[in-house]
Image (cartoon, rainbow, N blue to C red; front, side):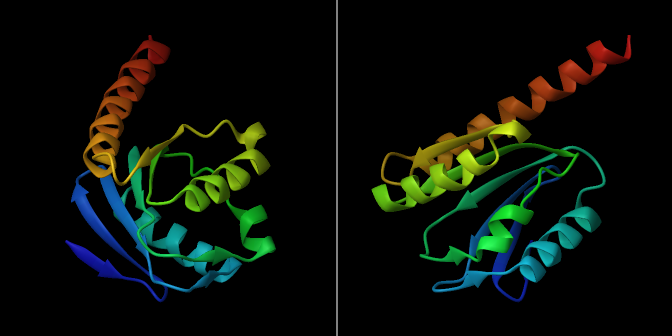
Length: 137
């Protein structure tokens, strides 16, 4: 099921995985980040993962880069990049949040990245469920 936000589309792939595609030439603001988090909170009250398909070129405002946080139920993020510039900008944002210890992996869109990213997310969700059940006992 596909949902349109003011700046991106989000497709629910399964009950715990969503694909995000940001519209072309957007500068993501703090308000847009909040809009996305609010949507994700409504759709995923449980553990979930995101496949961010970076097929379009877009930027983040400095404030938005700083406001990105890891949602407590967000267990993994797969970034599918289609250029070296995309990979570099993604790594720059990730480096700003090394203390947050996000579970993120970058995949090449030209090397079956979407499929590899989805498979990785499915495995990470299974692993996070196993770890949660271990912690409970």
